[in-house]
Amino acid sequence: MKDFSSLGISVKKISQLCGLTTPGISKVAKRVGTMPIDAPSVAKYSISDTRKITSDCFASKHPIEKKIHVFYNFKGGVGKTTMAYQVSSHLALLGYKVLVIDIDPQHNLTSSFGFYEGVPETEIYRAKTLYDSVARCVPLDQIIHPIYEGLDLIPSNITLTRLESELFTKNRREEQLLDIIKIVEKDYDFIMIDASPNISNLNLNALNAADVVHIICETQKYSFSSTGILIDEIHDFFEKRMKKEPPYYHIVPNKYTGRSTVSGEVISMLVSVYSGIMRPNFAVRQSEDFNRSNKENLPLIFFCKFNSPALMDVVEFIDEVVYISSSAEANQKTA
Amino acid sequence: MKRSSFVDRKIKFREPSATLLESVRRENKHGRGGVSLVMEGLKDEIDMILVSEIIPYKNQARIIFDLESISGLADSIRSQGILQPLLVIPSSIESGKYEVVSGERRLRAAQEVGLDRVPCRILYSNQNPEEIALIENIQREDLHPIELSEAISHLVEKYPISQVEISKQIGLSKSQISQYMAISRLPRDIKDHLLLKKDIKLNKIRELAYLKDESVLREKVFGGSLKSDNLRSVVFLKFSSCAGTVRIDCDKTNLLSEEERKAFKLSLLEILEKL
Image (cartoon, rainbow over all chains, first blue to last red; front, top):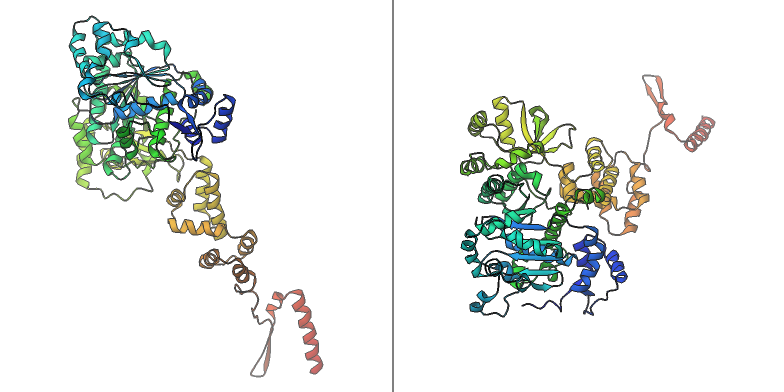
């Protein structure tokens, strides 16, 4: 497990996260009674204090209706896990209570949170995952682990693959995950699920549980084609098999670079077809900061520069997530 | 919460190449050009815009259209219609019209087929309408260089618009824009003085704007290097004699100032005395 207790966040970064001014944040900090950590040059706030500030000026002002979010694409390598990692880590820092569920047996998201730091490779499979709760009736509190304040994780490892065949034996095989989530839903503002890059019973469980599906796609040709195929498949699933309304689709173009002509062409095509479910004028840009974040198992805000495009893009992605997840009246009021 | 972009990512929307559009269409199992059937439900997001109301995007590099490929595209449009909506923005040059950001080829093919309207997605930019109006004014009027420099610096100060963006909108180069910015930084009284000179050349003003030493600058402006007025010598009274006839040319006496007139009268009286 990774230790986040010594880490701090500067006022400037907090203000960037919340979209407020630095003096504004300082005022809130005083009002909620927090004290900065003595840092050499810049005053920083602990995660706990940061959350006191942000829950006052952000989370409490934007209550969440659509809680269950799934990051899905059957195309691998598009950046699903990276985005799930950044969005959930920073949502927790914004004052929300977030539960992350890793349903990819490759457990990349679990590793990003430093969950297996110090654990030898051979012992990773011992950790209890969703498999144990669904098949072996292990109580949920034994598989939910705190990462830092506001962020809890249900980890995954290779044993999760056993869940696939287990699900075939059950009635209502696509509804098992939702049953589990319903037990803990009231304790959280957000439940973020990272799916594996394929179409499986487990992933269909995730889709069935979802309020919002984030389809991360690269601004590349094959990614564009598969997005169309994917949405059709998901739609078929809800219309013909589950016979219920599909969740909200949100398409996120990732790894955009202005230097590539293909990137520009594909994003034109994406916008011309899907602009109704994409944030206007938005794409997550390619940035080395994401790679560094994955390598060091540290969310962007803890190490990146103030004007990092990666952090800017994540903050804007989160703005869209909160917008989509808020009630219609709430959006009317703050418009 | 404001749901608009926080930062200008300078996303370059490029016209998809014909091969890309074609290969994407072939791969999709429904053969619908990569467009998910589900998106049919979002059809109300697509506007059918009259072909006559769509003009080329002014900033797009000139695309040389291969007539054969346009015909090929026209054939497929005849049988399947336009599968990918065009991407347009409301025009800032001609109001009521739209500039096509992506879809020039489809537009031309549609014209060949004889379609009235084409499906479009309207991309609304983050630009403020005041900003647009200001830029249009700059483009239309025959402005004094000082006035132009003020307008440009006003744009930069008031709106979050970069100099590069302005250069694209107005049609001046980036270096020209920065020259105008330098000019706008001249002291107020100098700018007012220069404004009065209608014929002053941009070169001259630019030279002045780049002078580091303010005293040298003031010397040049007020001290007489722009000296066209001071040493002007005007012939205002002409006597000529030709074959015994004396001709008097005194039209330009009205160019004289009060003091000059008085001095002239005095001089004339002296001359009369002598005669």
